[in-house]
Length: 315
Image (cartoon, one colour):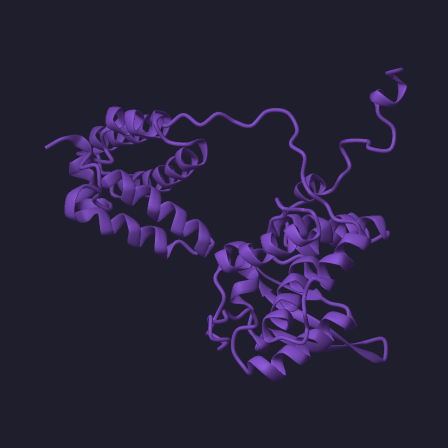
């Protein structure tokens, strides 16, 4: 029996053949992963195991990954790293003087698996989409509030650009998470948001968005805020992250931004707040970022679009 199999049998999840579900269950149990990320990891692992190769075969893993797209390769690498960390941790926890060499060999094998999948890091600077105040209003006006779908879409877009929510945060938000908090002699509507890593935060929203939520609650009833709508016009229980993406992409096309994505609305929330004078530390907290450096990457700060070299080229 090889060293990795020895450790797995006593201290970690098994990966090949009928034991593939053990790895998928490990992914599902991870509280730090968003549902959409779990789905991508599960897909990456399942597709690989369906080839009949073992996840412990570094050569087979490398050959398989080489033919994948960059994004698929990145998800597979991340899933393998997650699994490998779990196996290595369990192996170290079960180490004894008798099996120390086996444990060390297992750790080396895990490192080899992590290095088997090569993902090129993005270089340079990528142009992101930030909407102006006028474009945000145009986005809002694409929603026909005389229809159930229009009211639903207005709330979905409003929570993305008016509260800076991630897709997964939005799909998990319920009306019980919409609360009134007293402040300076009046009340402010706030959202109790559960973000990445199960971290909770409070996000205040403006009165117009709060009114839209109240109106939508009278139609949708209790439960999830973001709801699916059937072809017949009936409301479903919840809206998926993919459903949110399609709403944003469709309304983006209507205002001449066909590549608009949900995260662009989160960036816009940060950018417009910064331009209005909200401190970057406050924006960072509202977004649920662990540090301000992450927030800075959301803002259009690094590239000066007011004055650029091209302005001085006589062509």
